[in-house]
Structures are given as structure tokens and as C-alpha cells.
Image (cartoon, rainbow, N blue to C red; front, side, top):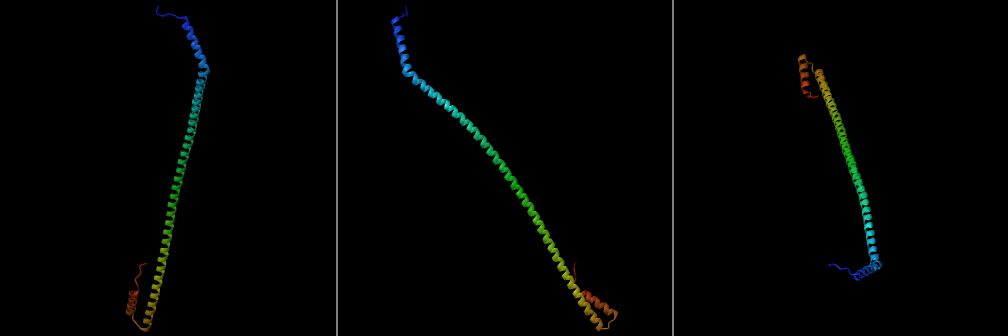
Length: 164
């Protein structure tokens, strides 16, 4: 027969196996189980920390997105206010320019009117002086009609030309 069964060897194998199980149970399984439980606890803690980190990261991302959106809104508001300020400044400068232009035009018109009035006064004074001189000459000289006409023509020729 190829395989022979030896009852003594089977007993010694079982006794050795049981002794090994008792020794391992007393000295080996406890530390191995404790090590495995410690590792399991470490992995569980690492997973919990990873989950907490993911939650924190999600919250931070939401806060960041909120801050970015708020910053964009504030930037848009600042640009809006700046555009309004520029438009108001532009309108104000146009109004000021129109007002100043109108004031300068009115001042120029007043100056022209004063100069015109002064020129007319000068012309009236000159005409009055010439009329008085002509009257003196007429009174001093007894003149005929032709002489009177010539004097008036001379008087008119001496008047300064006006462009009113």
C-alpha cells in the first residue's frame, strides 16, 4: 500500500497541533488581535478624519465661492458707481461749460452795447459840435442857399462813418 496510517504519528500530530493552538492562543492571538483591532481603529479614525476633511473642504469651497461671488458683486457695484460718477462729472462739466459760455457771451454783448452806446454818444457830441459850428458860421456869414447846402454837405463829409 502506498499510504500507511500510523496511529501514533496521528496522535502526536494532534497533540502538537493542540499545544501550538494553546501557546498561540495564550501568547500569539491576543497581541495579533489587538494589533488588528488597533489597525482597524486607526483606519476607521483615518476614514473619519478624511470624511471630516472632505466636509471641511466642501464648506471652505462654499465659503470661497461665496466670497468670490461677493467680491464680483462688489467689483460690479464699484464699477457702476464709478461710471455714474464719471457720467455725473461729464454732465456737470458740460453744464459748467455752457453756463460759462453763456456768461461770457452775455458779457461780450454788454461790452459791445457799451462800446456802441459810447460811440453813438461821441457821434452825437461831434454832430452837435459841428451843428453849433455850422450855425455860428451861418449866423456870422450871410449866405445864400447854395452856400448853406455846401456847408451841410461839408458837415456830413466830416462825420465819421459808423457801422452799426
